Length: 128
Image (cartoon, rainbow, N blue to C red):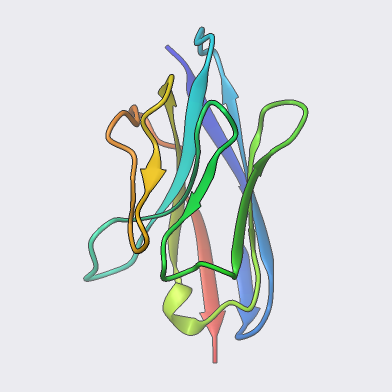
């Protein structure tokens, strides 16, 4: 069974930038998709960005234009967040799923094939 190790996060002022990284390990998938979701107190889980096995990317409307998901040569999933707002304050988690299954509509993202355990979570705090 595999696991995900996150790094990054922290505290910034509104308008600032942060980068999160997620390293998958121990998975034997030939192909896989990855994604990031966030949890904030009193709010439901929100998938903010996904990248499928073909490298197709999708973003939730709430962060579109301010976030970029990518994978580096080591297949780590990266989440670059810019122009952060106080409402972006949350714990961000990465997830992985075998094959396809991550996608976004014009407003929301979905990743029904995402497997547990998630990454350990990265706290992002944006102050006004």
